[in-house]
Amino acid sequence: MTHKIKMTKNGIVCKTNNTTILLDPKIPLEGCVNFVSHAHSDHLPTQNGVPTLASIETSRIAKLRGCKMDSSDNLENFSLLDSGHILGARGLLFDDIFYTGDICTRSRGFLSGAKIPKCKTLITECTFGLPEFIFPKLDEIKKTVNEIISEHYSRGIPVILFGYQLGKAQTISQLFGHWEPLYYHDSVKEMNDLHRTLGINLKECIGHTEAEKNGLLEKKPWIMVAPFMSEKSYFIKNMKSKYGAATIGFSGWAKSARFSFGRRADYSIPLSDHCDFDELVELVKQSGADKVYTIHGFVEEFSAHLKSLGIDAQPLREESLDDFI
Ligand SMILES: [Zn+2]
Ligand SMILES: [Zn+2]
Image (cartoon, rainbow, N blue to C red):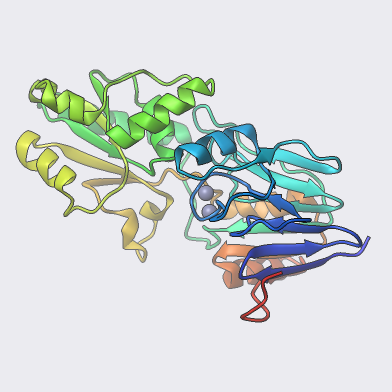
């Protein structure tokens, strides 16, 4: 079967003899297969009304985020494969093509690392496609963070753990939920409550507004899981000035000396929901693909590295500025 794959203003378009497949389109189109890989906002459609192909968890989380999708997780000749990135995240295998969406092959808490299928053509993300991004083992991360928290607890200092509201916040709620008392930022509480209804074992805790209203934050130390936000935000200023809280940020970018946005906290921990560089290379090898397209992140550098290994790779770029399909 012949395919034409290209990047457009409306996501990745893949045309086979009789089907057009849109991968993470902004605007799903009638008559096409519209695949939504997961519920992070840069992958969700901005318009509803046309049926999409997505996991049940993705449509439930999308709904909480104000995106009502008419979706199904079942379509003949299309396999949705767990991509290990966040709850509900899937890659798509069809014909001899595998699209990773956002992917992580390392297991973290309730998320199991993705298993890579054999394919001829691979479309892979490469958010951390530079050799400087090698992440530590999860056990090492847990040890480091538990030591930081323990040290602060011994001095009565509360600790706030920062991670993206969807994905990282649930993982760190689970990994460090044994510290008591545990509170959630209100937005994390909402997302954790939804995860619990989807079968994920997360402790039921009250949100920060309620905790503060009831004077519970005065009783130090405590631990709280919150979404990343600016140091200038009222929330952080208040938590620091009123309660003297220390902060730990969790992000893959914490590894980099060049990308400082991973270090907006007192401590930065390189815990990521994406593959690191070595894991990306391993993923490509496991797929056995003879053609690799790189998307998201260091697309030039990563495809150049693959070429140096003798793999036919190229960045998937918009060919024409006004291509929509
Ligand atoms: Zn994502
Ligand atoms: Zn993404």
